[in-house]
Structures are given as C-alpha cells and as structure tokens.
Image 1 (cartoon, rainbow, N blue to C red):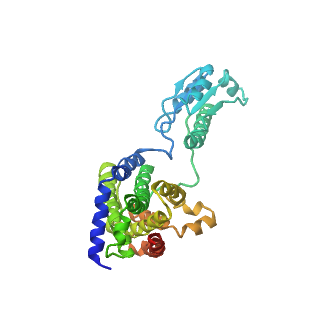
Image 2: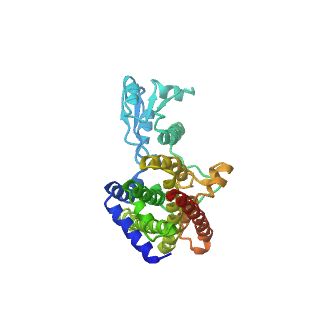
Image 3: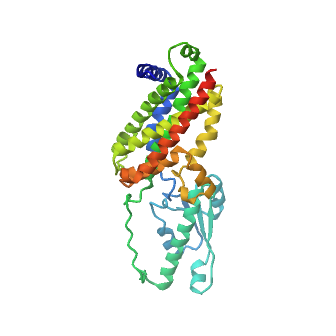
Length: 370
C-alpha cells in the first residue's frame, strides 16, 4: 500500500464532504444542538409536572394537600372545577388531576376511609409512572401529619448515609449529554463512511478509481481515516466546547485515553458503514439498512438501559457490537476516571471487532468492484 495514495484519496473525501450541505448539517447538529438538548432536558426524572386539583372540600386538610405540591417535582397546582377536569386532561394541559371530594376532612376525622381520585395522563409515560408514586407519598404524609396533630420526623433504627459518587448532584443531564456524544460518534462513523462510498457510485467516480494505480485496501483506508478524522474533530468540539465549557459537566478521566478508544471505535463502525454501503445500491437503500442496523445498536448498547437488565441472549449477541464496548469505555473513563488498567479489555474488543469488520468490508468491496 502506498501512503501517498491513501493521503490524497482521503483529502479527496474530505473535499467531497465539504460540498455536501446535508452531511455538514448533520455533523453540526449532532455535536452541538443534540448534545445541548440532551444535557438540559429532564426526560428521565419528574420535573415540574403539571397538576390540577379539584378541591370540593375547602377544608384545612385539603389546603395542606394543595400546598404540598411544589417545584421542582411539580408545577404550582392549578385549582379547577370537576367539570373542567376531563376537558383539561383531554387537551393535555394536566398530567395529574387530583379530586378531593366534599366532606373529606369530616369523614377522615370520623375514622372512615374517604377516597381521593387521582387521574393520570398515561401517555406521558415517564412522568405518569414516577409521579403517581410521588403523589401518593405526598398525600399520605400530609394526612398522617394532620391526624397526628404535628409534623413528626421518623426515627429509623438504621441511619442510611447516601454518598453519590461520580455525580454528586444526581443530575441526569450529565449522563444524557455524554451519551449523546457517544451515540453521535457511532451514528456519524457509519453514515459518513457509507455515504462516501455511495457518493462515488452516484457521481460515477468509482470507475475512475478502477483505472487508477490504487488498490481496494487503499480506497477503504482512505475513506475510514478521512471520515474518522471528521468524527474525531467533532467529538473533541462536543466534549470540550459543549459538554465541558457550555454545560459545565466535569470530565473525570483522561481525554487522551478516551480518544484512543474512540479512534478504535470509529475504525470499527466506519468499516461497518462501508460494508452496508456495498450491499446498498443507492442512498435510500443505505438509509433503510441504517434503520435496521443503527437503531438496535443504539438501544441495546447499554447507553440507554443497563445491559445487565437485558435477556441473556441479547447480552451475548451485543458482545459482537462495537458500540457496546465503547459505551462501557466512555462511561468508565469520562464518568469514573478509569485508567488503561480498567478499560484495556474494551479496547482489545474494539480492535478485534474492527479488524473483523474491516476484513468483511474489504472482501465485500472487492466483489462490489467486479
């Protein structure tokens, strides 16, 4: 292989990418807006959930319940009538609607078991699941204190000391932002490398390469290093510019170690992208293949759901996916400050998987040229 050929072919790929506005927009969007929105959203926690209360009792105990719902978990409660409750739920204005019936305090003091109706908009699945438990605990606590005539602090026989490591503020935005960068690395590595090969076919330049003194490995390596360089540059900007500087999320470990692992991951996923491109006849077909391959890779990699919570067959199958090991490496290095002595198995996995994928893509590319 001639390094000069690999260099010049890679520069050609970068120039071709610069003339593709759609790909440039995807790169900028993935490493800026997508990271920012992931880091500032609160999709996995209860945050300012809208709640309305129908107070048909107008008693001190109902006022206690009304005042118990406060930010940040709930928005300020809205007092409504019973006739408005269903309409507001249908319009999506309220996630929770609490109906306190008439004579609720009188029945409570009489030793009866009055009922409070809680309506939940279950289409907002995360808030509905978490918020129902919060509402039940808040109402139960207020009623217990009202009946006891004073606010009591429960004395437990065991003192549990909570010491959160790696994320002392328990801010899920830290996790979401860095996982957005990791997912963008996987997605763009596959898309850019595969699109580079599809672009050769659509522009008719693949025939030009066949008559030039270049070999298939040189063509593949040039596409991988050029598109990988773009992805690595975007990753550096996303981590240093968006995550560290703009969002203020601390990066615990060695960035050099992380980028070494990211380079191995880009090598593996770019090879996968080229393999998919050789099986597709056009960019729309390549897009359909991406849907079938990329979505399972992202969902089952452990970045959204712990891989330990998945079925045994899925866990074993995902060991052959490069981003499964890259997610472990990124979390260990950027969250927990792990060193090479911890993440070397993941780096070996990435190197082995990348070598296999490169060999497969090279063999498929040779058949693609015939």
